[in-house]
Amino acid sequence: MSSESRRLGSVCVYCASSNAAAPAFHAAAESLGTILAREELRLVYGGGSVGLMGACAKGAHAAGGRVLGVIPHFLTSHERPLKSIETVVVNSMHERKMMMFEEADAFAILPGGIGTLEEVVELLSWRRLGLHAKPIVFLNLDGFWDPMFELLEHIVTQNLVPPEFREVWRSVEAVEDLLPAIRDMPCLAFTTPPGVEEMT
Image 1 (cartoon, rainbow, N blue to C red):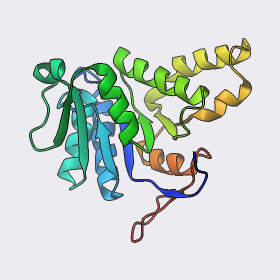
Image 2 (image 1 turned 135 degrees about the vertical axis):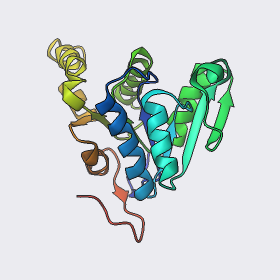
Image 3 (image 1 turned 30 degrees about the vertical axis):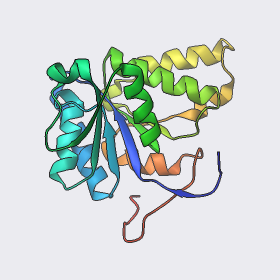
């Protein structure tokens, strides 16, 4: 993979599809969508209108941002794609995850359930195997991801992965810090598009 500077164009957001998540989580997801639109970054997400992912997509769309949803056909009746947003319907979860990965330059991980865990573990595994060098940043609202970080640290201390594995992701506690953390990660050097002030 080239080490040259490149423009950050798309951010994939992994998060919950449940409407029962805490209101603060929903508000953060909507805020992230608005921030992505303001920064002229395309949101890539799971394609539904429900839960945190729906809030993020609606926030981005309402702010005039570009949004790409990717959803398998069997979930369309449950997660209900937004008609106003570009959505690609695929045949399987595997196709969904691969397209989301390929369409993204970086990943923002918000609170989520078992599906989000699956996506995150696969993303970290691919990074460990050297299959990508895309930034991965967790939004650790109210310590949501602390148990996950404790498990990952346990894996490191048990010598199952090298200490350098700690450097393949970052964690922030405020939604406003997500993009600065993504841009600051050493995986890839990003340039800021002309006319867009980089967040600090």
